[in-house]
Length: 297
Figure 1 (cartoon, rainbow, N blue to C red):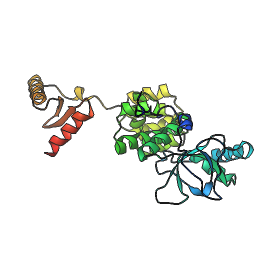
Figure 2: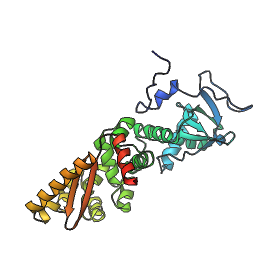
Figure 3: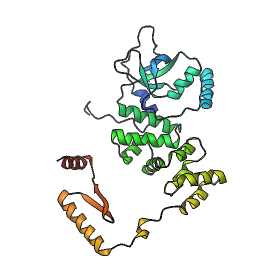
Figure 4: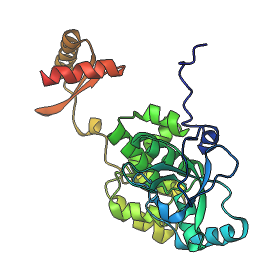
């Protein structure tokens, strides 16, 4: 086999997969961190580390940090942090995974911590950060959804590809993203634990999710009871609100067929009065590129 063969991606296999694939070229500065006998494993001053800009966790529970700090005082840090060098900055590294350990280590007055140094792109840094937190179940449902949203919007991942990367099903990704459509006060209730993600998912399609969320909390309803309450408060499907004109449906179908012949893609037209939506379906990125080129003229 050629030495240029593609190397399997460690994404989706967790941070443990990184331990055999670290940047062994890193050389600590004089009087800086010392190697521990394992290639790529290094101790680094806590002052050299910076919070990651792609850190998916937005809230750090102080009580949980104190508990972790006490554990670190007794047993030390059992798993190294994953960091990457900050370009153009001497003795400065960004934390990709392990920020809770770094914060707890500072609370424990540790001067240095074990780290793995890797050269990572922004996309990889964000992917690894989300992978670690999701696998440790360290993120709230809202933080998890926000992380998925950023990977989709900033790096162009599809939900299916994202599920493969983080080891979650596509329906799970979809459910986490749907929580972000809830009003901010309801999201806050999920963040502080007053509502579970199960409660929240039931509220997504309702007309007044905030009002219902307050009712759920006040009455102490379980998820099944919340689902029953939500069904009574959902918007009626559009199909029941208006009568379908058979002639209009035939015209729309004919337009879809004509467009599909012209552009070579599956097309869906949905009308609502004089307005409507036009949806184009593509099967791969080449087709998407072709659509964009056509739109740009």
